[in-house]
Every structure is written in structure tokens, then in C-alpha cells.
Length: 316
Picture 1: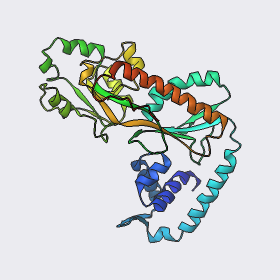
Picture 2: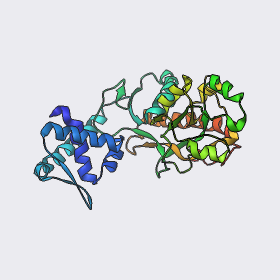
Picture 3: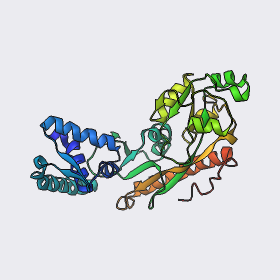
């Protein structure tokens, strides 16, 4: 059963919090991933472990007798993790969205490492230190602003393209530029009420496009970016994580910045109150704020006069 430790952790949290979403928030993964972990355990045992009731998730009869032992076991593990936390020395454990980690954090963290070579980073369970069961030191997410978090920056959404495709559509009449051209759909921003989809963006800017809802869908920014750079089509995407690609010309903006929209959601960091007393975490928090301020300044410089002003975007 040791190989199912993460599944047991997801199960215990789902029961304790009453929902897969609350368990996902505690584990910094998606509700679907929590459900998959629990399903893997149910398949292994050949038993149903959870049932849904009006008040939320509840244990089945098969699980009920084991719950006190499960609860005690994870309390002991949390206590052990807290004690071991004191011995982690220079490690900083971070949970961040894959796109933010790959496109923004990891490329920049090399500079922090050069200035502080003894600090060891573990990002989403991978890196220079061992994965641990306890909570991370820093969690970075894109979503509605939350109290107690450090607001990093909002994003600015508009169509992105490869330079080749921008050149192709530039030869067409503006209203006809997207007719028959492949559109890629990115769901990363779909929960943000300010984020447009292709249908609403096309209607707002009075372009012609048959069936704008058709096309390949992507959940994450990185794969849609790969498709755009491979000339597979255009996508509406935020530019906050793409500054280097835009500045060096590898990525193109086929429409004016005035067609863009600021997100209402933002990238935010949350640090554990008991971990910010550690000097290396304090240094990382200050560095993260400085790097985020540079991104916010780049966004303001290029897009600040367009749509809703982002003057409050770095107010955290």
C-alpha cells in the first residue's frame, strides 16, 4: 500500500473537507487529479470508498471502519513532516501551474541560483531536493485574487501567431483575415469572466469567420504555443508569460494591441506563514516580487494604455 500513499492522502483530504475541489486546493492539483488518485485506489482494492450525499462526500461502509486509522496516520505524517522541515536547510518547495513554471519561473530562477547557489529548489515535486509529503513553501496560481496572497501580475489577452501566418493574413482584407484560417482554442483562461473566446472576440471586432467555435482545444498555454509556432493556427492567449518570444520576434501579434483585454484574474503567490521566517524563503519572496514587477512594467509599457488600465495589478 505504500505505493498508494498519494491516493490515500487524496482520499483522507476529500473526506475531511467534503469535496474533491477542496482536497485539490490543499494538494495544489486539479479536482480531476484527486478523483483519479482515489479511483486508482478503489481499483486496487476492488471497493467503492466514496459516496456523494447532500452535505458532500461521505465514506462508504467499506471505508468507515478504516477512517480513524487513516486520520491518525496522516496526522502523524504531518507532524513528522513539520519536524523534518526544520532540517531541510536551504530547500524551497514550490507548487505552481505548469505553464507558469515552464514559461516564466524556471527560466528566471537561474539568476536567483547564481546569486544564491546554496538554495535548492523543488518545483512541482521535481528538482534538487527530495519530494516531501507536507505542504509547500510557496504556491503560485492564476485565478481570482485571494486574501493573504502576493499579487504578481494580471495578463493581457489578444490573438497570437507565428510571423509567417501574420504575414499571410496581413495580405487579406482586415474583415476577412480569419475566414478559413485555423483557430486554436485555449481553455486556460475560461473561468475568467473578462476573457474572450474566438466567437466573442470576432464579433467585438466585426470580423467575418464561419463557425468560429471550431478548431483544436488546448487546456494549457505551452502546447498551444507550440502549435502556434509550428504555423498550425492562431490562438487568443495571454502575453505575460511570452515576453521574450514577442520581443525577439519568434512570436507575432497579428492584430493591434487595442484589440486586447486585461484579465480580471491574476497570477498570485501564497507563502506559508511559518516558512517566511526562513531567510532563504524571505529572499526568494523579495526576488519573486522584483521579477514580477518587471513583468508588470513590460505589460504596462506595451499594453497599459489599452482596454482596462492595470494600475492595480501589482498592488500586492
